[in-house]
Image (cartoon, rainbow, N blue to C red; front, side, top):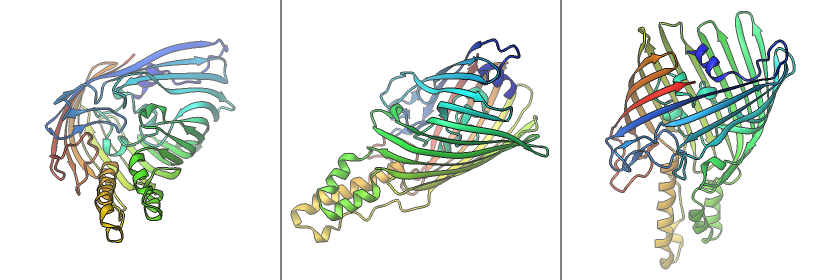
Length: 405
């Protein structure tokens, strides 16, 4: 699979010996259909989706379907470039293509590579190919870990150093940049001063990946709500300062490992996200195990995300307010609690699936997820109605056809 992916997507920067410029066009895609038995919420694969399966439509093609194309250009032994464009449902309920990667690479030495432009953030074990469904066993990466990331790339610079420690091959990466978050419209925001350090170590069948990324994040989620708090003077302004996502520092630490000797595999990741805002603090993780038998790969996954901080705000002190303002203040307090509950997922999922490699570049997958939001949270679900009840299991059945070319 890894070899085919490298051929199919043409890793940028591999120059021909005669320095003749070369161009390579490749791509990937997923055609999927997902069904949820929950009628009071939508199941979705990402926080950046407009809709999902369940409330909006019992069967939805929007949860997993997407198409990507990549152009690799090699100019000589040292200079190369890559452009990757992805089309998938966004928050505006269309499939307008967006630029996922667009960077120029300079191979300074055989071990050191420098890039300038739009670069994928190396947060997760599958970060470089999280869009390429053919490259991983599941229908989709576990949503408890991968689904809540509002930032997937950075506009800036990075440096990658490859080095060996005995039999262990390492790739250490440092990056700095920003992101206008244009892909999350109609939500407006930006991430500035993105700084990240990651290292990937390969030792035979074992791969270990560790990352720490930090950024200053601004999102206008809840802007009318916080304007209402500000109208209550110093007390309300203090609440806005604590919970509004306005120039708040967010940090993400992740460690993942995969052991894949061929006939079977096991992989897992642990992540910690921290921010002083309504996004709160969470810990997430998953473990997956699978067995390969000819063209078939059955697998099981357990994943979870939970809050490690408060999930309710103190809110405005109603007793200190004139009677005429208490009802309005109570509504603001309830709105803030609901926004926090929707922003901090607490959820676990047990998944079982089967992958069938139909052809060298085509895989058909079937997966069943038993999704359970916990502690009154809506989990990763969206479009919840007043009839939604937390702490009960939801069944999600998905089928996808993944391909690379």
